[in-house]
Image (cartoon, rainbow, N blue to C red; front, side, top):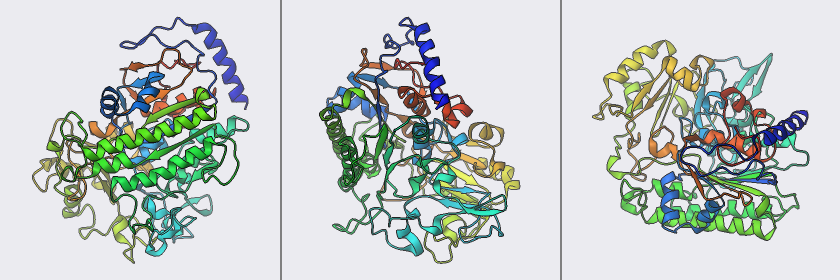
Length: 554
């Protein structure tokens, strides 16, 4: 609380010093006056996963997202916003809520590897180290022993087989997702520094997203437990089979937000204060984008012309946004709520002509050269039962994670240079190449990787990152034509609209390049808190978003 009070005093001095004479950024209209957003009492963060900047521009100009357009009129649209290097859901959301990249937050993917951890069943931490950490739909107890995901809440508890262990002093302790994230979150900062505050969030996995609580394990008061991969009893399929089914799942999140705006908890069963900081994630657009072009999914051309499913998904998201804004207005909360609409990640490739699906040639190349087990006995493939994340996998095997990127944790780090040499000899997309022979592709390792993502010797950072040509996804799947996770333009360049009714000069577009990490310190500034209370902001020097007129803006 002392830090928060010092920050308020310092901002008062800065406000008086800056006044209204701050210079406008190049390509931007005159900035809002300092302090005009001082009446913000609530912040609502919404992630429309897959939302590209081009989607925002097209739907606003084409009048196909009138509710988002209205928010843009009373806010600022950032046309040059990017993820910080990796664009999977974990690092994408971590950017928004920690202010940091994987280098500080330590989240590279929901399925990753950590050389310092022990197997879940190694309760004494006496065996080998090196575990394939899997914090996805199998983190809920429904998945124990390979069970079916029959409950929307994932079964109501953690799957103990999914929780690795770490040696802390003389103790061997479980590592839950909230222990796994390396820095604190905006939810923790708000809880710890604003008396009487309440926080809430809803996401796609019921238990894997426990890391939003931050290292304290208590950052989110109302963390809705919804599992997108659970079996819908009405259809006997999960909610990702088709985008219209995903809409039903996203409706759970819409209702959670409406309940919270109405003074209830996310379930609507308990009276609770309206959260100071709350938000949710939508998956409908992402599912529509991944669907094959032949089936009506994806985009029609390089200009981001949406196909039928994407068109309908954007309309659904906009309607949902309109319902949320209407509820805020009905409860007289709209004028005191900062609304941020963005995405954890985009999707690649939107230009179907660039699509390359040769299969997982990267993993195959590593296996063929004995850098990974030639029979695929590593990571999730190495369990005794055959059930994913059952806690019986082999230890110290290394791991590779591929989508439209390749993250490689070597089982023998002394082979790094030999592996890199092998990769560079096989850059061509002709099998068994890794499709990294274009000007935008790269193989990242050594000092360059360490500066960007941290030191692999510390256990968490991959030894090698392979960014293939834009358009390549390491799969032969016939059910999807787009993916995310890497640094291709289409999965890293996102839509970002920040709206507040109190901004007197709304409707502006900022063309300056920004990163989604800047959302987190912006949220804290809006709530009159010091952004440097976030560890990642302090470590990485993350600045808040420009041209919003928040007191204390750089």
